[in-house]
Image (cartoon, rainbow, N blue to C red):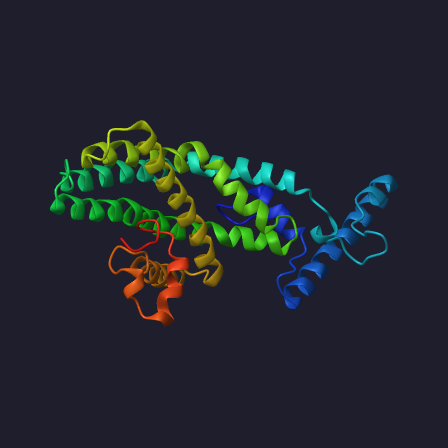
Length: 285
């Protein structure tokens, strides 16, 4: 009997697949698949269709049952399929998609208003340092937490498909960024940079703006990639977000904005090498 509110195609796939996530599930689902095969053989014999019996046999080169792990799916095909699916899921969630764009716009307006038209005096230079930290750190922090949350929602499907041997880690990671390249990964840093850079009164130079935008774009990608590391440590959002906050706090204090690197104790100076939010050429402005 088909359960209520269940997709019929997915239900048929579930009952006809071998679950390899644990020995107990594999044994139970294998027995179920064998029973389905036995019933189909009886049906084929009754309807005088022996060819169908051979075509739909699930044995592979003498093995007892078929497994997706026996297939070698090209990485290119995995990326293509996963990118298309991630694109569809993203487009079907307009609030989530618009949320990232609105966040970039609102963050740029609010922080740009705080650091509006910074001067060139000594106090203005100190304020510019704070403005650079806000642009480099806080924007990336919000993206880090948001991507961590989204990954905890999407990763259970990946875990199941990876357990069945149909997708791999590289294809999953690459497809997420390809699907969101033109609707999030580039527009969000670009919107923030266009508004914040000119509101803060940084140098009105196209080359300098491109450098600023490149840094924000790079830190956006670092944040979303680091979110994957946090979810790899814990599939639960509470644990993943805790790991993200702890690591981010450590690297933010080693970036050179709050304390000069050459004044830090020798045994903790190595933390500057894990800080992607950097200040100055030697991280010690």
